[in-house]
Length: 523
Ligand SMILES: *Cc1c(COP(=O)(O)O)cnc(C)c1O
Image (tube, rainbow, N blue to C red; front, side):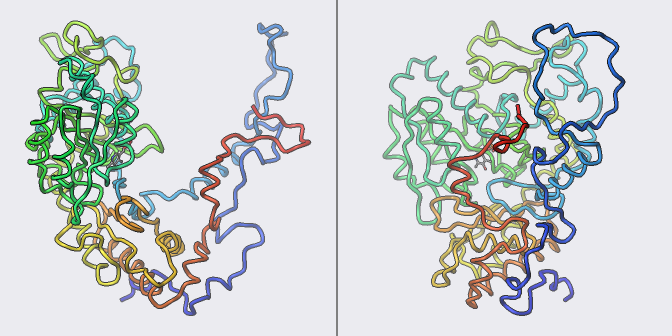
């Protein structure tokens, strides 16, 4: 089949190595790009303004005398700099982004169009509420969709990421324990070993002691271990469902029953809601608080640390402790409950200035309404189907971490199958880059040795999945055939090869400094 040639495997095993490095650092038509500070355009400017007519500045002594230290570039130079940089980014608009636990799905352009409507994009959070009735109605409608889809009575919209939502949920739980006078004795939060790192980090940040709960052989919470750790000193449990092994927590009802029996709250990490949306309502499972990553389930863009949005749905018991603000409607339209007083007396305060990420609210609601409830259900079904297709097509060559039964939205492999090859998960991931594929999530969850976590999402067509599977199979076969160099040296075709990732993480250089002896001073 012609599509099977797309991987472009070199005919001899080491052919990749014999290619000379280029003289300029460019590759193909991709330019090597230096830091903008390293351009030689100091003193240049992209605009031609007339000399100011004033004689002297109002700043008096405060006028700057030294050069500002910003590089000067013409408009085309500026454009090229940023476009070249953008070409070095992998993007969901380029190809499959198989990162597990990240849910990188297509962001429909309709959402973008809606978010850019001037009535949403040009408003200011301090405008009188009478002039932003449409925006408040949109927030109210979004809250309605979120509470309906989750079967929960309340939602706090303002958290700005999944981790921020966790913070919101645990602060509401702490406020509830404070209100009932139990806070002083309930100092522990139970977290399973497979949890996303943000869970224990959040619990510790809120001042709790984190206690780990073991996992069973088949990748679920060990209920017996959980039961033995629950008690009057536990404030909450944090369980991800479907969990980070890509599996549904079969004993979720028992987990929630035991938790409530012990007087603790059930925090559910809902980052994987895309696997169950329209099929399962967390409220029916006894969840007390759950964040929803709009940038995962509801297709708003991941913003490189922001802006995301992580609204938190809350049970009857926790709803009074939700942070301000929230939208209420009455005869005279919509208004915001802004302060922790009167009707928001028990609110723990505010999580952030203003109302949260309006642009994300618009995008998420646009996604929900354009799919409808039936379409959202199909999102979950297709996400799960796609992951199982990958699992089924790769399991003969690679070792599935939990081979028994189907997975949810993620296919998880370990590195058993690489045993004896001298090739590691990292080497395999680097070789994927040479083949034009962004690597999957590696070494997470920590409970699986050499983990390779693949999440295709519902976005990918069968053709794209087949292309990915073909590349993975070709690489797996090369690994098994002992073609070690292909992996150890990879990536051969990326602009940069193996980086010193440890040093980059331990001593990151976050600020440019002018080279010794230069007369350029950066700010
Ligand atoms: C993505 C994710 C988070 C954190 O969400 P952010 O929006 O990145 O802060 C937490 N838990 C799980 C399981 C996740 O997948």
